[in-house]
Length: 333
Image (cartoon, rainbow, N blue to C red; front, side, top):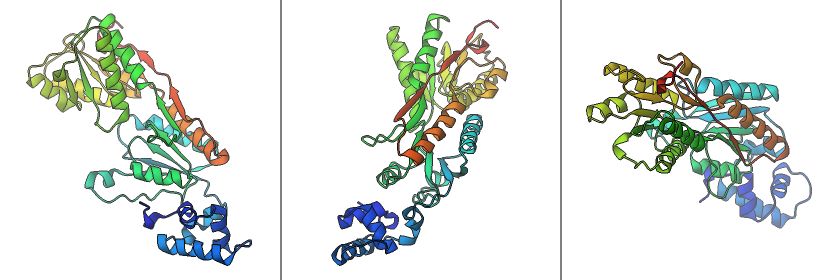
């Protein structure tokens, strides 16, 4: 069902059975349009509660020279390199950057309202699950340029997506823990259920266990960092190693292990994912998977600019990851 309060020129054209160009000519009173067609367009405008002035800029092909970034919130070490990459990319191509955080919408059950859209930006970068799928679909159908960062396109839409090798990176890390360090009882601390990168990292973890004939143990699967590790230990579960779905989680896990009087890696090994800047400075330094966070962000801007200027972009860019071995897993050095 069309959201009348957010109807677009494409909705009007579809309702009236004409082209977008015809709607533009009616609105701007340019070119010749038959009275019958003009009446159909005006009727569609009224039925959809379409506001012509909100789309006038787009109809006249004027640009804002602005790129929007939608994310839930800015927090944790991950966002520093990501924002650096996005800022560098927008500056390189001569665009301004507008950022909107949607945490209040998601956290308080408020009805969706997104200040960044086709009315004040030339295109949007959407980080993970920060934008409702219905709004993504609406913008896509309105032919508004979108690039998804660390999130797959909704089925059947083929919206450009930039992400990293989450599954393969996690698989390589768990393979290393099993084959090189001799660990078999490996816990996994997952991120939120709706976080796509966490899902793929869990799949890599499970694949590695299965490939080595190790049964998946639900007791070793938790969500969170400090609290999850505390509960794990209170339940009497003692893994050989803990694989944290991201480095921020690993920081909390490390604090929990130390608070429980356990040594890393002597008592329990600890590894993460992302290789955020602080990872190498922890005590002990964290073994992790290096994800090209800044590169992915900059590439997302590159693809969005291509989409804005040429209406074409790569549908999927999957950037490689790299295993980074440090002392937290029991390796020397």
